[in-house]
Amino acid sequence: MMSVVALGSAGAQVLEVRPATPPEVTTSIETLRAAQEGFETFRRRNAPGFNVRTGPNRCDEQVGRFCYWYEEDAPAPPREPDRIRDARTRLIDQIDSIGRLYPNDRWVSGQRVRYLVEAGRHDEAIRAAEACTSREWWCSALQGFAFHVADRFEEADSAYERALRLMTERERCEWRDLKLLVDDNQLKRYREQGCAGRLAFEQRMWWLAKPMLSIRGNDARTEYYSRLMMAHFVEDAPSAYSMGFDFDERELTLRYGWPIMWTRSPEPVPFGGEPGLVGHERTPAHPFLPARGVMDNPASSDSAGWRSKGIPPVRARYAPTYAKRLAALEHQSALFRRGDSALVLVAWSVGNDRDLRAAADSSGLTAALVLTRGEERDAVVERGSVVNGAGTLMARSAWGSMLLSAEVSAPSQHTLARARYGVRRSDSPQSTIQVSDIVLFEPYEGMPTSAEDVVSHMRTSERIPQGSRVGLFWEAYNTDVVSPAGLDVSITVAPEASGSVGWVTRGLRALRRVREARPVTVGMRDVAARGTNLTARAVEVDLSTLTPGRYQLQLELDAGPGNVVRVERTITIVSP
Image (cartoon, rainbow, N blue to C red; front, top):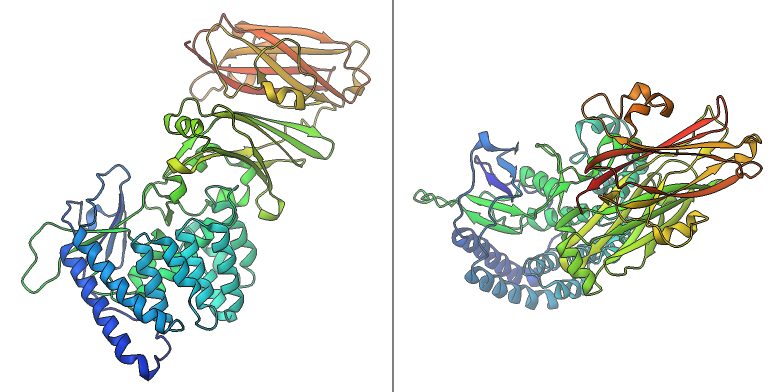
């Protein structure tokens, strides 16, 4: 539960004065404003009681007069009472009648869409936004808001782009300003750049902020623009909070989103006072923007950095409706070289996830692989098929380190299973020969002869049942320099050491120096490797002697002094 409670008292501060309403509709607008004031007062006084933690000492962060905290595992607030929903419906009917008469009035069109969205009537909100005839950028932004809350992100993105093009340079700069969202590690650098100079930073930030890189449209960016629109709606209208909209509420809205539910403290209300109101935003809500380390070098990021829910205080959060649950994707990935290109393979499965398995049974899963160096313009997106809750993905990109994001989505379950981390090229500068990643595959009749061949046999996990045999596939490059004596190949599977020492003592990584730690070893001489630039090899290894636990699998290729390369993969042996 994300909650915000007002602490002190402060007067409302109107941030922007709307254009004057034509005299002939002033009476109608004034009547409508009075009806809206009545509804918000009614909502405040009839909000369901709910016990929450309160007080400035319990805040994750205090923003002016508001105390903000995030509790994902707290009890859900009670549903909105029918009497509030009925009152909102009556207000919407009044706004509709005025809105049809005056579609060019910004205030009316904004409140009309706002309350339709609040009522969950998204299709009607889109039609109301499309009926707007106000000049300049307002109607396009209003359509962007309506499309966004309906999860039509590609259309929302386009509508907001139209709105930005219609804005003045000053308005556009204010809309793009992210100073309230970026953390302290990035704020100084951001402030030092002018509005035009920040554009590249903002584009990169919004691209990496997307929870689902394969989704069409940038829902992270349209979420922020929609928060700006909500601030516009509320700044010239009654707020649910008793003291009215001000800079504090605006900052909260931009950083954490607007409340989707209100409750009040069950404590008695002083005579003549108003009940203390608590706003509840969507959960789970993850950090909105990527950390500086990810921004600077996404290819060096690990999966933990992308799964983190943040240690309070988190500067800004976002709870996408399509990912009310963000799960780790069980998978295996591998990187291969194709000249100046990279070939990335991914095999995945959701067989151990009940919700995703149910979606797979009803053909409700989508899968995609995204490769990027950090900019949307260099991204490669490949979509794959799903068979019995599993699948494979294959994509090509420019050779080098990159960010990988494998994404399996179940819209009906509002669940996203994701694997996102940096994939680094394994070049060894001291060696002429090079080696790819190791692929674990299910043994079958025959052996794979290329990466493209092995992908359909890849294991979907690095977890291997005890007593198994497993296939290993790799490619070696520049093997035309191998001497007639051939290429020595060594495969070792050793227990992963715990603590700070690392795997079988990091200082003793050379295989021939850790023989006492080898529960499984394979050695052979590859004579056929010489004379060819690329050598693909596969072997089958018996792991039946290994007990459950984590192991480090290491492959070493030795073409002579100074021409040795190694690659590793962690595996886990599990009980059958």
